[in-house]
Image 1 (cartoon, protein in one colour):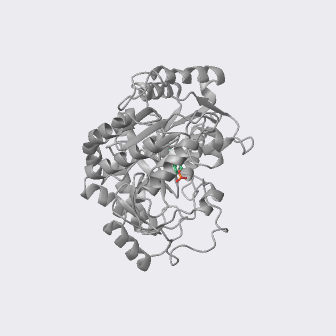
Image 2 (cartoon, protein in one colour):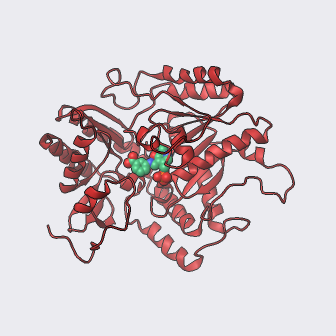
Image 3 (cartoon, protein in one colour):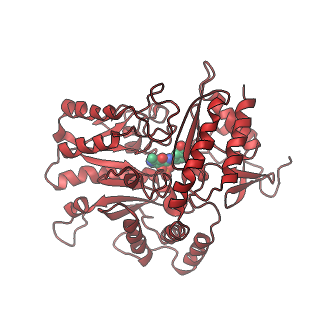
Length: 442
Ligand code: PXG
């Protein structure tokens, strides 16, 4: 189909695209020009079903009236207010709304502009918290293999996605990693949380014995690892991690950038799994992806440890020009209202069994070696082409786009995370089309 000249620029060279095969893209650009509800519209006029909620962020779907209106109104009322030593009402309202939605005890909110910044913020708060309490030797950070915590230096240091780390030098010192929780064979084709692997949390005891608990500030994990290709926590795993952290005075950080805001059918994974962290990082669904914003949630105990010394002194030397900016705060408030009014988290939970069965119906499709799911998240793992890892899944992504569905791939894993407004007919379209794509693949 001919591209629409009005909507496709004739020079694509200047924009160095993020996490993209730039040369491949610019030879055959895939361009979205509008979006509504569950669908994108491509520059060639085709409708593309959004199987990924943008990049796991448009949980309420696209072009939602309340959010659009809130941004329009805010732009005309208060465009920007300084974030340091000044305030504006909506940032406080949003912090309160977030606290009310979060698990009990997550009493304070620090605003950022992305998941990556939320992670850096949480790691810094963790180290500074121990220091404020007189335990300044607690500076080590423990992440996990295959973990994704954004792309800044702290995040890639605790993260465990090898391609995101290996060309960027020596990273942070004083970091160690838990083993990942993927046990193919033992847990293949599990629906929901796998049975095997709780013992992998005990590796934290080994790390504590190696370094000494008194040197460890925090453990950071995704309660459900998204970017690496959807790895669910084995039953009992998060509980054990929590218990070991508590025993040794180590803070537990849940990176909820993907799992927050209804993705699992609950407000947050912490609530879903009934395991409370000390700090939570969020972004993405906080504003439905419409305006960049992130937030770190902290317990009262952590926040209060900073509230000492002379009152005219800044308690935490950290923050961003755009922390809690008015446009993002307005978008956030309208987003949380949309989730609440439409009961979207409960809706995700209701739709989850249908989603699960549809997804697992692909078990006998070509190349499929594993399927994993929870809430409205699903992953289909493909057998890699020998000697050419990632190529098969990337081809599936390109073919899927041509056939009118948007999916994501990481390595040879296809990941899907549709908006929570998805209907059964959309699930059928998404999974039916994906089957056609897989059957036609080399
Ligand atoms: N933590 C987690 C758990 C994430 O998933 C980030 C931090 C970083 O967020 P920002 O806003 O800085 O990108 C993420 C982001 C994908 C994909 O398809 C995942 C993310 C971003 C883009 C694509 O797997 N996760």
